[in-house]
Length: 186
Ligand code: SF4
Image 1 (cartoon, rainbow, N blue to C red):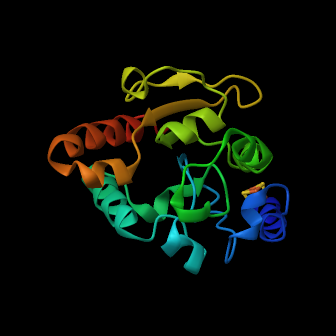
Image 2: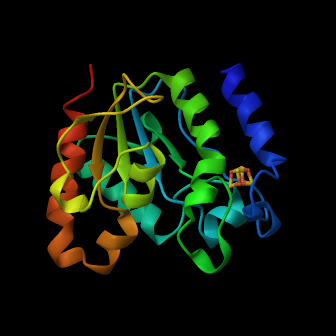
Protein backbone atom coordinates (compact mmCIF):
# COMPACT_ATOMS: atom_id res chain seq x y z
CA UNK A 1 0.00 0.00 0.00
CA UNK A 2 1.49 3.29 -1.10
CA UNK A 3 0.65 5.23 2.06
CA UNK A 4 2.48 2.67 4.23
CA UNK A 5 5.53 2.72 1.96
CA UNK A 6 5.56 6.52 2.21
CA UNK A 7 5.34 6.36 6.00
CA UNK A 8 8.17 3.81 6.15
CA UNK A 9 10.34 6.12 4.07
CA UNK A 10 9.49 9.03 6.39
CA UNK A 11 10.43 6.96 9.45
CA UNK A 12 13.75 6.00 7.84
CA UNK A 13 14.85 9.64 7.81
CA UNK A 14 12.91 10.87 10.86
CA UNK A 15 14.81 12.92 13.45
CA UNK A 16 11.80 13.91 15.57
CA UNK A 17 13.18 12.40 18.77
CA UNK A 18 16.64 11.53 20.16
CA UNK A 19 16.28 7.84 19.25
CA UNK A 20 17.37 8.58 15.69
CA UNK A 21 20.92 9.07 17.01
CA UNK A 22 21.30 5.47 18.20
CA UNK A 23 19.56 3.61 15.39
CA UNK A 24 21.19 1.58 12.63
CA UNK A 25 17.91 1.75 10.77
CA UNK A 26 14.32 2.46 11.67
CA UNK A 27 12.08 -0.60 12.01
CA UNK A 28 8.74 0.26 10.51
CA UNK A 29 6.68 -2.95 10.26
CA UNK A 30 6.23 -6.36 8.71
CA UNK A 31 3.16 -8.10 7.38
CA UNK A 32 0.43 -7.52 4.83
CA UNK A 33 -1.56 -4.29 4.58
CA UNK A 34 -4.70 -6.45 4.34
CA UNK A 35 -4.14 -7.89 7.84
CA UNK A 36 -7.15 -7.85 10.15
CA UNK A 37 -4.92 -8.12 13.24
CA UNK A 38 -2.17 -5.62 14.07
CA UNK A 39 0.34 -6.43 16.81
CA UNK A 40 2.17 -3.50 18.43
CA UNK A 41 5.28 -4.05 20.52
CA UNK A 42 7.38 -1.59 22.48
CA UNK A 43 10.51 -0.77 20.46
CA UNK A 44 13.11 -2.45 18.26
CA UNK A 45 15.88 -4.40 19.97
CA UNK A 46 19.38 -5.20 18.71
CA UNK A 47 18.33 -7.82 16.15
CA UNK A 48 15.54 -5.64 14.84
CA UNK A 49 17.83 -2.61 14.63
CA UNK A 50 20.31 -4.66 12.60
CA UNK A 51 17.78 -6.21 10.22
CA UNK A 52 14.95 -3.67 10.00
CA UNK A 53 12.39 -6.40 10.79
CA UNK A 54 10.29 -6.29 13.99
CA UNK A 55 10.35 -9.26 16.38
CA UNK A 56 13.11 -11.29 14.74
CA UNK A 57 15.11 -12.34 17.84
CA UNK A 58 14.26 -14.73 20.66
CA UNK A 59 11.08 -12.81 21.53
CA UNK A 60 10.06 -12.98 17.89
CA UNK A 61 10.53 -16.74 17.78
CA UNK A 62 8.35 -17.10 20.87
CA UNK A 63 5.75 -14.81 19.29
CA UNK A 64 5.76 -16.85 16.05
CA UNK A 65 5.21 -20.09 17.99
CA UNK A 66 2.47 -18.54 20.11
CA UNK A 67 0.68 -17.20 17.04
CA UNK A 68 0.64 -20.66 15.47
CA UNK A 69 -0.66 -22.19 18.69
CA UNK A 70 -3.43 -19.56 18.69
CA UNK A 71 -4.45 -20.46 15.14
CA UNK A 72 -2.69 -17.53 13.51
CA UNK A 73 0.42 -17.20 11.39
CA UNK A 74 3.02 -14.46 11.36
CA UNK A 75 2.45 -13.93 7.61
CA UNK A 76 -1.18 -12.96 8.16
CA UNK A 77 -0.66 -10.37 10.90
CA UNK A 78 0.87 -6.89 10.68
CA UNK A 79 3.57 -6.28 13.28
CA UNK A 80 5.09 -2.96 14.34
CA UNK A 81 6.32 -1.13 17.43
CA UNK A 82 5.26 1.93 19.41
CA UNK A 83 8.55 3.60 18.49
CA UNK A 84 10.38 2.85 15.26
CA UNK A 85 13.97 3.33 16.47
CA UNK A 86 15.91 1.34 19.05
CA UNK A 87 16.37 2.97 22.46
CA UNK A 88 19.95 2.77 23.79
CA UNK A 89 20.64 -0.43 25.77
CA UNK A 90 17.06 -1.57 25.10
CA UNK A 91 15.62 0.74 27.74
CA UNK A 92 11.86 1.40 27.52
CA UNK A 93 10.94 4.43 25.39
CA UNK A 94 10.20 7.58 27.37
CA UNK A 95 6.86 9.39 27.31
CA UNK A 96 8.20 12.12 24.99
CA UNK A 97 9.64 9.47 22.63
CA UNK A 98 6.29 7.63 22.53
CA UNK A 99 4.55 10.94 21.85
CA UNK A 100 7.00 11.89 19.11
CA UNK A 101 6.42 8.60 17.27
CA UNK A 102 2.65 8.41 17.87
CA UNK A 103 1.77 10.06 14.58
CA UNK A 104 3.38 7.19 12.65
CA UNK A 105 1.26 4.74 14.62
CA UNK A 106 -1.86 6.80 14.04
CA UNK A 107 -1.32 7.00 10.30
CA UNK A 108 -0.37 3.31 10.09
CA UNK A 109 -3.56 2.23 11.83
CA UNK A 110 -5.69 4.64 9.80
CA UNK A 111 -4.34 3.03 6.64
CA UNK A 112 -4.76 -0.53 7.90
CA UNK A 113 -8.19 -0.37 9.58
CA UNK A 114 -7.65 -3.66 11.46
CA UNK A 115 -10.42 -5.58 13.22
CA UNK A 116 -8.33 -5.59 16.38
CA UNK A 117 -5.06 -4.11 17.63
CA UNK A 118 -3.12 -6.36 20.01
CA UNK A 119 -0.78 -4.40 22.25
CA UNK A 120 2.24 -6.35 23.51
CA UNK A 121 3.20 -4.81 26.85
CA UNK A 122 2.51 -1.57 28.70
CA UNK A 123 4.39 0.86 26.42
CA UNK A 124 2.29 -0.08 23.38
CA UNK A 125 -0.93 0.40 25.31
CA UNK A 126 0.25 3.79 26.59
CA UNK A 127 1.21 4.81 23.06
CA UNK A 128 -2.44 4.33 22.10
CA UNK A 129 -3.55 6.72 24.83
CA UNK A 130 -4.97 4.15 27.26
CA UNK A 131 -4.47 5.10 30.91
CA UNK A 132 -4.18 2.24 33.38
CA UNK A 133 -2.60 1.30 36.66
CA UNK A 134 -2.08 -2.40 36.04
CA UNK A 135 -1.80 -4.21 32.73
CA UNK A 136 -2.90 -7.46 34.36
CA UNK A 137 -6.36 -6.00 35.01
CA UNK A 138 -6.85 -5.18 31.31
CA UNK A 139 -5.17 -8.01 29.43
CA UNK A 140 -7.23 -10.43 27.38
CA UNK A 141 -10.36 -8.27 27.20
CA UNK A 142 -11.22 -6.08 24.19
CA UNK A 143 -11.49 -2.35 24.88
CA UNK A 144 -12.45 0.65 22.79
CA UNK A 145 -9.50 2.92 22.06
CA UNK A 146 -9.79 6.63 22.88
CA UNK A 147 -9.45 9.41 20.31
CA UNK A 148 -7.57 9.81 18.05
CA UNK A 149 -7.41 6.01 17.68
CA UNK A 150 -11.19 5.48 18.03
CA UNK A 151 -13.15 3.62 16.78
CA UNK A 152 -10.50 0.90 16.73
CA UNK A 153 -10.64 -1.76 19.41
CA UNK A 154 -7.68 -3.16 21.23
CA UNK A 155 -6.87 -6.37 23.05
CA UNK A 156 -4.00 -5.82 25.49
CA UNK A 157 -1.57 -8.54 26.44
CA UNK A 158 1.97 -8.81 27.76
CA UNK A 159 5.20 -8.47 25.77
CA UNK A 160 6.75 -11.71 24.41
CA UNK A 161 10.04 -10.83 26.16
CA UNK A 162 8.15 -10.97 29.47
CA UNK A 163 6.74 -14.38 28.53
CA UNK A 164 10.22 -15.53 27.51
CA UNK A 165 11.53 -14.82 31.01
CA UNK A 166 8.57 -16.55 32.69
CA UNK A 167 7.59 -19.16 30.13
CA UNK A 168 6.37 -21.70 32.68
CA UNK A 169 3.84 -19.37 34.27
CA UNK A 170 3.02 -16.90 31.50
CA UNK A 171 2.78 -18.88 28.25
CA UNK A 172 -0.70 -20.22 28.91
CA UNK A 173 -2.16 -16.76 29.55
CA UNK A 174 -0.35 -15.30 26.53
CA UNK A 175 -1.82 -18.03 24.29
CA UNK A 176 -5.28 -17.38 25.71
CA UNK A 177 -4.96 -13.66 24.91
CA UNK A 178 -3.82 -14.32 21.34
CA UNK A 179 -6.61 -16.86 20.89
CA UNK A 180 -9.12 -14.24 22.06
CA UNK A 181 -7.66 -11.80 19.53
CA UNK A 182 -7.91 -14.40 16.73
CA UNK A 183 -11.60 -14.86 17.55
CA UNK A 184 -12.19 -11.14 16.82
CA UNK A 185 -11.28 -11.53 13.15
CA UNK A 186 -14.19 -11.00 10.76
FE1 SF4 B 1 11.25 9.47 14.55
FE2 SF4 B 1 9.93 7.56 15.87
FE3 SF4 B 1 12.51 7.23 15.27
FE4 SF4 B 1 11.82 9.01 17.13
S1 SF4 B 1 11.53 6.78 17.24
S2 SF4 B 1 13.31 9.33 15.46
S3 SF4 B 1 9.87 9.80 16.30
S4 SF4 B 1 10.82 7.38 13.80
